[in-house]
Amino acid sequence: MTGAATSFRYDLDGQVIGISVERAELWPSFDLMLGTLRVDEAVDPGFRIDIRETSALPENPAGKLAFDGEVPLDGHCRIIDAGDIVHLVFPGLQTASIHACEGSAEIRVHPDSKVKWTLLMMVLDAALDAAGQHMLHTAGLTLPGREALVLIHAPSGTGKSTTSMALASLGFGLCSDDVMILGAKAGGVTAWGMPRKVKIHRNTAAMLPFLAPCLGDKWDAEGEQAVPLERLAEIIRVEDVRARPVAALLHLARSADGQTRLMPMARTDAMVALATDNVRTGMTGLLPMQKRRMATIAALVKAVPTFTLEVGSRPEDTAALIRAVLDQA
Image 1 (cartoon, rainbow, N blue to C red):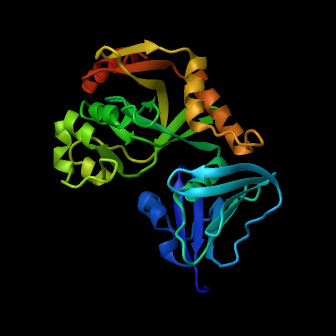
Image 2 (image 1 turned 45 degrees about the vertical axis):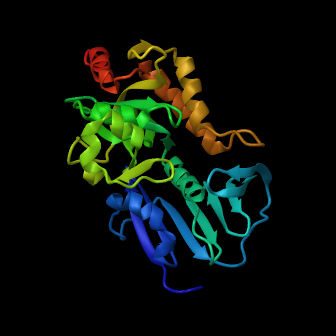
């Protein structure tokens, strides 16, 4: 299929990405998430993404096989490391070629398939990496009355969203419950939240009744509802999208006795925990982008205090503990 391309521009804290796509329908997921960051098309992008439909997919590029296996929800894929170019291949469906040095990426999609989330996120990762920013699986909340924020890390299912919502009900400002963008510069470490919907689990809703006005009566197969930030902003403070200084890193854990505690955590342990969940090792070792992500994580744990936050039966108890420690910082 050929025709006039549709263009989009998004400002990711100074890194403008430009998307050229044959049909707007090929880019719906990202526009739903990044729509609030869209800027005028006249702005010159620092990273370009070209998306085209074609039945002739470039599935066998030269390079070293870095990954060959199943990706949750998206199926079988391969990653090929060709030095300055990294290729992602979903056989028979779509491919992506990321040119780090050129600041560009090409996505090729079979006419009968939709662009997969894994592929989109890897391309977005590359665009951020080109500007010295890195996407981390953490929540982020501003401290009451302050611009500084805390990052809360935990493996999926540990209670990150529940803790985030509890803190947001007690004066903390929600930047994101799941994805924060980290940048380490000479002036310090900053982060901003990806403006995406918050998934509220039915267990979270049961523990935090104040969320009820934002929820309907239908839950998905995982027992969750995706709630727009605009809806949440009616009952909690949702922060605008801009980089803020990081005040602390908290590693979330479940309390064995139901009591909530905040304890110092060794920086090396904090780095291992955060890297385990955010840095991927392939058959060829760490790709260059993953090495730079690791370096940014190292800069974070070196620059800010690190803690273990054990959450008990009352997630709202975390607010007073965090404030007691960090209000003096």
